[in-house]
Every structure is written in structure tokens, then in C-alpha cells.
Amino acid sequence: MISLVQLFIAPAYIAPNNLIMDPVSKDYSLKPYNSFHIEANARYYADFSTVDELAELYNRFPQNRKLILGGGTNLLFTKDFDGLVLKNEIKGMELVSEDSQYVYVRAGGGENWHGLVLYSLQRNWQGLENLSLIPGSVGAAPIQNIGAYGVELKDFLYELEAFDTEENKTFEFSVNDCELSYRDSVFKNRYRNRFVILNVTFRLNKIPKFHASYDLLAEELNSMGVEELSAKKISLAVIHIRTSRLPDPAIIGNAGSFFKNPVLSILEYKNLKKINPLAPGFPQTEGFVKLPAAWLIEQCGWKGYRLGDAGCHVNQPLVLVNYGKASGREIFELSEKILASVKAAFGIVLEREVNII
Ligand SMILES: Cc1cc2nc3c(=O)[nH]c(=O)nc-3n(C[C@H](O)[C@H](O)[C@H](O)COP(=O)(O)OP(=O)(O)OC[C@H]3O[C@@H](n4cnc5c(N)ncnc54)[C@H](O)[C@@H]3O)c2cc1C
Figure (cartoon, helix red, strand yellow):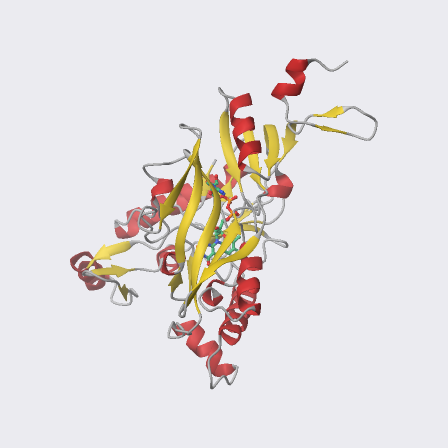
């Protein structure tokens, strides 16, 4: 017989054989859920597709650490997770309103990011094409303000809804509330581990304003013979660049750029140039210069380095890879060595982009 307590603590469904199925699994392998393909187990694992399911799971495990999981493409497990891993499966994409210039499109946090890009391209809504093929979920995109080829999420995010795990309530965040900057947001800082992003609303253009001047993209569009720009052509160019330059995580485990590109003041950059005249730099607003971390790492001799199955990619030194059976610890230790050598050679402290768990 099923006790009332069981019914209340476990949001459950009745299987055909009339047994109550607990939605929470124990000692659950996370290997299929992280793009590094690292062997790690979650003590507890469940997915949620509504805010009520999420709230119930939080209430049921008040004392345990929690980890919200999207596509697992921006994290590195260095050990088993001794807590509850919650996979976001909130789905749905819809047009919520429009005016003469814009459409407002809402997507569930558990939707695949590239799926949303395709959805908008099919409807001729412009804006997300430069962000084509970035792996992962819609709900994780604001966490580090995803960006590529001259565009960042903040250019098109309108607002989002997030569940406050301390107050047990849902709040709306405008784009300003999210405090988005280069691979950063309020959710990585002040509100770290507090909010779960449920859905995101984007403001996309009806009247296109393309961003095609980023060097690599402009070259690719040129070699494709594109004369008249369109969102679809930009998306194709971006897809072509990404598939030809970045290792496919389905084949070689990785989480994209492992480190952020450091941003220096003009004075720091000039001092660096005195000793390293070839140091590349990209001017940012307000007197800052962004330096490619890949260049720093390559100068320190890491490009193509491999120890066991942990390595620094042969073409993209910013991407650390798992060639097969590397542990998260081994990848992490490699990242420590890279950090130390870049600091020793240039006095620059790189920051990891990937979340270390
Ligand atoms: C090959 C490759 C290329 C990449 N290229 C780029 C790129 O060009 N630009 C770029 O910006 N990134 C890039 N990335 C990184 C990654 O795709 C993005 O960071 C993406 O947004 C991660 O999404 P995810 O769902 O996989 O997040 P996960 O890895 O599952 O989670 C990342 C972090 O966000 C938290 N989180 C996830 N979902 C939620 C939620 N709903 N609410 C609250 N917290 C949440 C997690 O707890 C974790 O701390 C690349 C990764 C790979 C593997």
C-alpha cells in the first residue's frame, strides 16, 4: 500500500503496473549529460518541466546541494556531485507580442539554443543568427551572456523569468536587471546558485540590422560569394566557421573556450606590446583592449599538448579536450598549469569560462 507521506513527498506518476515511480534517481551517471564526457555520478538526479515540479524537488531536498543542468556544455565535473542535479526540461517557444518593428518571442529554459535560432530564422525574425550552433540550452544562455561573431545575448534578450530558490517565488528580470557583460551576469555573481531561469523572452527585429563586420564572418561571407546579406546566409556562414574550426564535442569531449579573453587597460596593453610587439589586441569601449587568451596560451607552448587523454586542442588552444578517458581532475590540473605559465610569462591571470563543479 502507498502511504500518504510517499504521495506527498514524491511527485510521482503511476506506472502501468500500478507502482509509484519516484522521479528522483540515485547515483546517476552524468557522463551522457556533459560535453566533456567526464565520468561522474550525481547522488540524486531528476528533471523538471514546470516550476511546480522544480519547487517540489527543492522542498523535498532542503539540505542538499543543487546543480541546475542544461545541456552540460559549459561545465567540468571534477568529482561526483554529492547533491541533487536538476535537469531543466521546460519546453515551448511562442510569439508573445509584436509591434511594427519587433517580435517578442518567449522560449522555455529547457529548449535547445540552436533550435530557437532555427525557429526564429524560419519566421524571418532577425537577431540570433550570429549565435547559431552555440551548444546548450536557452535557460543557460543568460548565465554567461553567450556571444559569438560580434553579437551577445544582451543585444536581444528582453526579459526572463527565474525561480528564486530562497524565497520560493518567481521573479521577472529585465535585461538591465540581468547585469549582462562579457561572459558574465548577475547570476554568476550576486545571485550565484540562487535563481533558476525558467524562460527567456527575446526582442527580435522585423527590420533587419545585420552584424557582419566581424573579421572571420566577413571573410566567410565573402568566400561564399554573398552579395546581399540575410539572417539565413549569416547563420550558414557561422555554422560553416564553427564546424570547420571547433572540435565537435560529440567526437572529442570539450566545453568550447575554457578561458575568457582577458581585458586589459590601454596602459597595460601598451606595456605588454613593448615586450611582445606581436601581441594582438581588440579595442573595447572605454579605453580597454581585449587580448585573445588563445594567443597567450599558444605562446606558452600549450597548443597541441597532450598528457594521457587530457589535452589542449591542436588548432584551438583555448579549447581543452578529453580525448577519451581523461578525468575531470586531469583536465582541471591541465588548466591550472596553463594558468600558472601564462601568469609567469605575461603577468596576466586568465579566468576560466567553464564552470568547475
Ligand atoms: C563546442 C562548444 C562551443 C561553444 N561556443 C560558445 C560560444 O561561441 N559562445 C559562448 O558564449 N559559449 C560557447 N560555448 C559554451 C556553452 O555552449 C554556453 O555557455 C551555453 O550557454 C551553456 O549551456 P548549457 O545549457 O549547456 O549550460 P550547462 O553547461 O548545463 O550549465 C552552465 C552553467 O549554467 C547553470 N545553469 C544552466 N541552466 C540554468 C538555468 N536554467 N538556470 C540557472 N542556472 C542554469 C549551470 O548550473 C552551470 O553553472 C560552447 C561550448 C561548446 C561545447
